[in-house]
Every structure is written in C-alpha cells, then in structure tokens.
Length: 513
Image 1 (cartoon, rainbow, N blue to C red):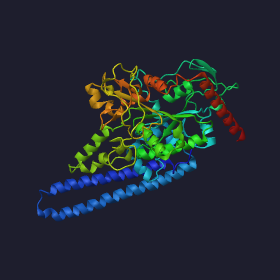
Image 2 (cartoon, rainbow, N blue to C red):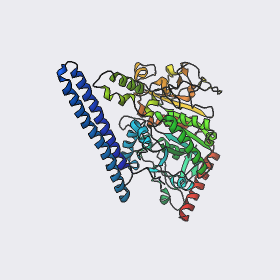
Image 3 (cartoon, rainbow, N blue to C red):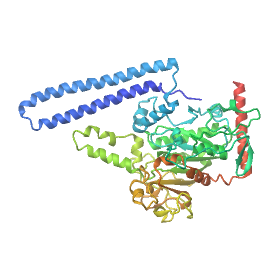
Image 4 (spheres, rainbow, N blue to C red):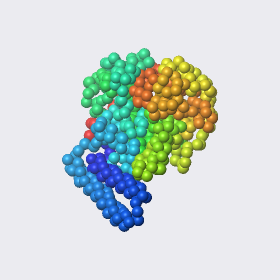
C-alpha cells in the first residue's frame, strides 16, 4: 500500500538539521562582520591590520564550523538511514506528530528539500488511515474496499497534512462536527433506507476483517476526529480522497502532479468514476485551481467528471500576511546587523512566495491573466451562516474568472472573518487572521467585483482561518452545494452497488493472495 520514500525520514531529518545549523552559523558570521565593520568606522588606521587579521581568523572559524555541521549532518543522516532500514523503523510521516513536523518543514523549506531529493519531500500522494495508497488497481482496492463512483478530493493548506481536517479547535468551536447517532446494517440516504456495506469511518484500512458475516458493518464515527470526508462517506456514500503534498513547492507544480495522479486514479479505480469534486482549505484552494488549470490545459481525462470545487478561506488574490512578511524582510535588509536574517522573509519557499498574490500558474512576476467565462449566474441568498451578505455581495456576479476557475464545473467559496459582518473594521483589516474577505471571496481585483454569485458564497462571521477545517454549518452547505440532498433513491442504490462491487474485487484479491 505504501511507496518507498527516498531514504528514511529519520536520516533526512538529521541531514536537514545539519544544513539548518550551518545556515545559522553563516548568518551569525555575517552579523559578526556587520558589527566589526561598524566598529572600524570610528577606529583609527592603526587598527586596520588587526581588523584584517581578526576577519581572516573569524572567517576560517565560521567556515570550518559550517562545513563540519553540513558534513556531520550528511554522515549522521546516512548512518541513521542504514540503522532505520535494518531495524524497519516506521516512517515519521506515518505518525501524527511526525506528519505535523514534516508538514511544517515542507511549508517553509519544501522547495529546497525537493531539489535535494530529500526523503522529507514527498510528491503529492493519496493517504488513507495513516498510510500511502498505491495508485494501482490492487493498491486502491486495498485502501478503499468500499469505493464508490463519487470521489471528493481534499487538499490541505500551507504546512498542513491530510490530518489537519481533524482539527476542531476544541473548546472554541461550538459547531465542530460530531458523529451521527445512527448505526446498524442500514444507513439513511435521502430518507431511504439503503442496506450496507457501509464502512466504519476512521477504520484502519483493513476494515474487511471487521465485517460481520452478512456484509453489513455498523457505522461508528469517532467523536474526536469526525471530518467532512467522514460524514460525506457515511451520510451520502461519497469516497473521500485525501492528498498530502509538499506545500513549499510551486503551487502550479503541485497542481500538475495532482491532476496527473487523478487521471491515474480514474484509470485504476475499483468501480467506474462518475463524478469528482474538490475541496481545498487555504493554500489547498489555490492548489485546487492549479489542478483544474493543469487539467484544462492538458486535457486530462478526469476533468470530464469534475462537478464542484469548494474553497475554504482561500487567498485567491493573495495573502496580506505573506506580503507583509516579504516587506518586513526588505526592511531588515537596510539594518546591517539584521540583514543576515532578512532572507528568512524575502527568500521563503516557492509555495509561500506564490501565496503573496495567489499565483496558481507558472509565469514570471505577478499573476494578472484572466479567462472569460460564458457561464451566467443569477444572484441568490448567502445562507444560514449570516443574514447579511454585506459588501461582498453588493455587485453582480458573472465577471471574469480567476485562473483555474474553469467553466467545466461550479465553484463555491466560504469566507471567514472576525466580527459580525464583512463590513466591520476587524473583517476588513485582519479578516480571519490570515486571509481578508475580499481575497477569500474571489473578487476580481481588476474589476473590484465578485467572481461568483451569492448562491456560491457562504460567509462565516466570528470565525478564524482554522475554524474552516471543521464546522457543522460548512458541512451542511457543502452537502447543499454538491446537490447531495437531491440524490434520487436510484442513485443511492447505485452507490451501494458500486461499493458492493468494489468489496467483491477486494475479497477476490485477498483470496488470490
């Protein structure tokens, strides 16, 4: 089910630590030089020879330390890799804490890790219950023994992993998802009792062993880790596909790789794929658009099955936090003793650089191109989260799309902000703490109007960026947007037949083994 990484992650962490320590040593050296240069400005010529000697000795010392740290990191990493290989250590990425650490490293240095082909940099991959799913017929049947023909793809944000969808902000989010009080061999779908097999959400990948003889397991959802995907699977028969990707890479590169992987998934899926929807949080929404742009430009086969895209707090026109950090780094450059640290803000990962202006396609400079849409929409109501659409819905929709918002499907946005309305000072200045409402609402910055109709927009007042990962109101709106409440009984029965067919294939594979 899993694919062999490029070396063991434990060794790669040691090597990365050596590189980081060497880089820090270099910065300290530059601070030392800046202080020395400042002091020589008021010293007399007699100190010149002493300063030259001091500079030479310091340079030799700092360089030796840097070289030693890099070499020590590489040698230590290789040694640890061999030990891990011999003792069959579990990869860090397969554990919750390890995945969190690697996700954070990828966000801030993932592009450099990728160029070094570090084991810490993984290409976009599908993860299921803490394991990588092999994109082969047998691998997908093993990872998804209850596969249906309706796939919902989830794409996480910067420095996150697929496990981030379980974040509930305990004690602060009154609307966090909880388990339904429904169990037994039947599951209600649109009011119709549809017999199993339905998987226990959060199962550990080998759920076949837990199925009773009649093939109808009870549904148990983990109250501490219920996700949008869990409920879409148990309530509506969709199959959630969680990607994990290196958020420090170019957004366009991740999008192209994910689009290619979706083509492979469609070709190897246990049952015919009839529909694919995408849901992205924060940067994941930009990756969603990049995936659609790559699919559109490359005429990917899966695009003909694309239905809806949902963007949760996505900085469509850029993040003010990323832009501010870049400007702060430029300011540090003019202070000699702080200049050595300015590149931490100005030379961030490629992924963070793309966040400044919401770039989703490969091109030099700022993202400015737009593609015209032939789809016309009529305004509607914003929804239950707020009674006042406010400034975000003052003008008509139907304007040029942002790149990646293709006409093949329908697009929806969820906009979170602090304050009661999007007109409030808090909403306009700090938004959801990371993204401003005007950017999350996918406004066209050249025209100053929304790209989407009111029907496709949900406002979430008094909420932060991370409330978007797990919220009952958002889940209900997703169900409405994806038209899951309007499914006919025939479609529900067909979804169940798809699951039964997938399970039969899975049983055949196990018998063959």
